Amino acid sequence: MLTEKASYLKGLMEGLEIDGSTKEGKVLLALRDVIAEICETVDSIDEDIDQICDFCEEMDADLSKLEEESDCGCDCCDGDCDCDDDDCSYEVVCPSCGDTIELNDLMLEDGSVECPNCGELLEFELDEDGEEPEE
Image (cartoon, rainbow, N blue to C red):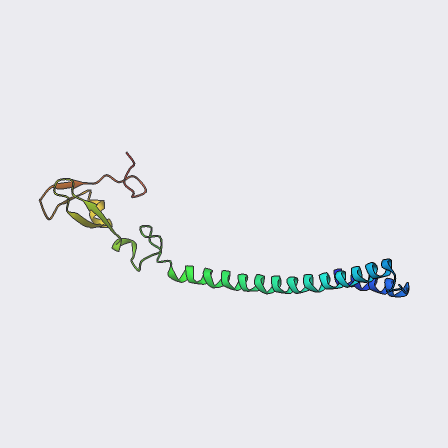
């Protein structure tokens, strides 16, 4: 649309038979050329934007596909593993000896586990969502 308006304006100016040897004529002809150049640049930018938009849409579709493929479906790891919910593991530190113990969901559901290092009974209280309650 902008290019069409610039072409129309150029046609009007040519119909006026502007004398390029006068000061006013030089200004008007220079303005005509600048307008034509601006229109070409805007058209080029529009084409680039269209290509970028198409590329972004493709990337978005590819990313969505990757997210679907990588989602393991478990709640414990936000899709960063290949586990089932029963295989999810958590690390806790024994308050008595400082040993790090790896627990799974089944151990947490039991409510307690004995530290393999010092024998301390570690008890867990989970809320209705299966998460440890905030204190």
